[in-house]
Length: 297
Ligand code: G1P
Image (cartoon, rainbow, N blue to C red; front, side, top):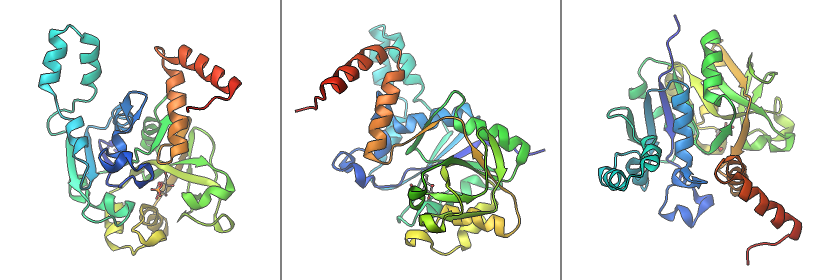
């Protein structure tokens, strides 16, 4: 029987320089879409997929993340006394069970592959998921859950995939393969950030992975790749070289690149419009704004 995926790695060591000055004191992952930090979306998606152990690969200046997931008895008492049960309920989703969450430091910014490798001892000999919180994916069935279901059939390694414009391939890992929405497909090659003319397709890797423990072994021996960094893409490509199975999974859902300002703004608008308590008012405001083309002064 295939082992269930119950562990997930969240690489959150990045400095978030694109969001300076905000990220001078606030980790990028704590920045909020409407009223929930980016990392909460990632955790909720992992939980929906059956993840029970959450491994954060952090760096200096990220302690706000640890506080965020800690219980907060004073605040909870104040809310309880004030009868604010709805807010108490909201807080519950941020509480993690004791021992369910682990923090590991990546001491040097040597790349995504290196960040994942830092968690090798906590992964042991089990399949594991990797979630990049910058990629926020809205969908009826959360993306990782779709993948876990598909992976139960295929085994091997699996990466989320999405079609992108040809001229954008140099921002992504790119797959050699052909997919269809809502299904998995075999991958015969993977390249990190290729120029459009060298890209094997326009199917980009999006930040959701289900990986075998072999990947940790590959990471300990691969050399630096694109951008002078240890690339997760290269460690997965090494599996293909050794004739082990790698699948792409073209998920159903909309992905927002919250690692960029434009993507973050788009996500804010989309998630704001989707909220029952805010959507109607916000939509009216946006219509008005667009028709008069006003901008904040
Ligand atoms: C990382 C991965 C890349 C993937 C991308 C998805 O790149 O290295 O393969 O396509 O995430 O968001 P980054 O955006 O960290 O440069």
